[in-house]
Length: 484
Image 1: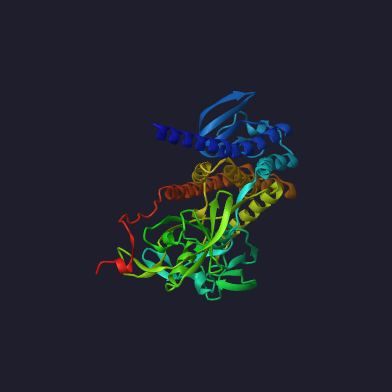
Image 2: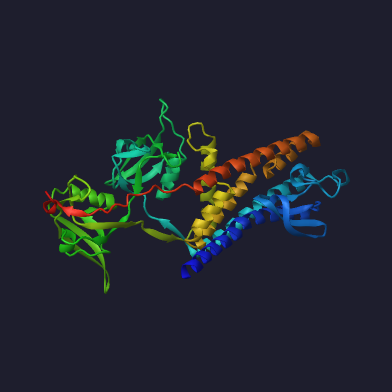
């Protein structure tokens, strides 16, 4: 019963976050148009959240406030601004009966939605500045393998390894852009569009090793899960002992579950893979572990000597050196208090990077990789489990992106209305109504088709399952204890 209550509570919380921050972002955008139209004296037919048939709402002062069937955005019906009756429905008054509006009114009303989204983002940014946002410290490579899988059962040489990158290298920049987190690394690689003269994918990586700065060209491959670029590295993680095996050196030497491994023989450990590699390459020589342990007076640092022994798994014939410890890992995070302007500028840069990647010929990013309403809702639902601060950070990104997207000079979007009004202002002639209606209708069909396309892939990602793991029990055993 408690589990059922917990599930219902979690879903109710997630639904509230979606309504407040995703629905709220759409509402704020349309509210901007609505208030600007009221201020400039435009005739307002309806204020709709969603498109299509009316689900419910009310009428006041001749305005139909409604929630519509298709939750793909919203609109404020302003026939003086643009004749959109083919999309938004018939108007209660004939357009001929309405007086024309000025160029200034058209621009102010059109841009007001984006302005309100930016204002909402800045309000969220102020809250985040006060509460702080979590950031990861890792820009150092903590794991890198010899080969990576590009298709099921098909492996190729790891691009990062082939380019000379190694565990412990700190990534400074990619293609000239400063790197501040591993998230920056993944996104910069995934959205990269660099290509060599012979047509191979290319990323220029600058890194720090032993106090010296180096630059290398890496040839990314496509990730088999989302078909975006990857180079086969993972961040450095704080490594700790999650469990110990009876009869093995780790427990006998005095290590305990929860101990954090900082160094071995004075060399910094960057993650579980690094630790395992050092142990396996030890050839059984004693290793001096520098560890941190939670004590009665706080964190204590100590050194313990452990001698690996030759071992194997009970399902394998491969022999290797081990200490008999299960490993856990976590990325070190810190709370950053970033002012809302800087936070918003970061989002603008990320949005520009995404748009540039989508139109670049050399990029592997495609329209199907974008997220629509379903994808955004899924992101908020997953993020809601982390906390409202993280949801607000996502909402800030949504609002900045929504503002930029709507100001693109595409018919049916706000930027399209501004473009039409500007053309009419420059030429001194209004856009022919039939021509404008045809263009608006055509682009609305394209926009809805695009939304359906993106939604199709969003839904597909919802039902992508993790590969099943082998549930057969595996036990670590010493070679000398193995049956003949």
